[in-house]
Image 1 (cartoon, rainbow, N blue to C red):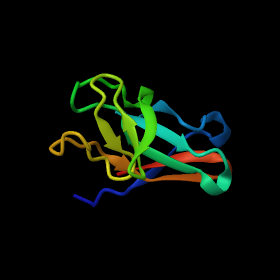
Image 2 (image 1 turned 60 degrees about the vertical axis):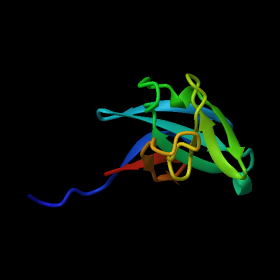
Image 3 (image 1 turned 180 degrees about the vertical axis):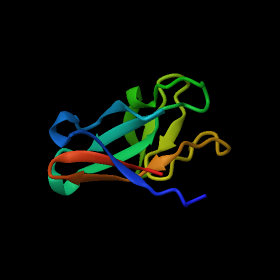
Length: 116
């Protein structure tokens, strides 16, 4: 069987993402939560994680509250309020829980998420 290659999936134009808010994107059969933080290009970051909250089983992380915990960017689940790192995907409140993290880039104004 040949090795699986990673692909970049185009999601939307960068200007469609509001800083501090998440959006859900269906990429194939996978729901991804995409976040834009900061409000200026030099202080702006894009993150993508699984949208499925492993604590509640609901696909809701894109609707969570974006913030930080001790300088680490996080999203708090709207269901039980556990905080998930946008960098590592680990749950800061329940160390045995985590979500997948995906690389994000902007190409010619289009946001793309790397799936593998």
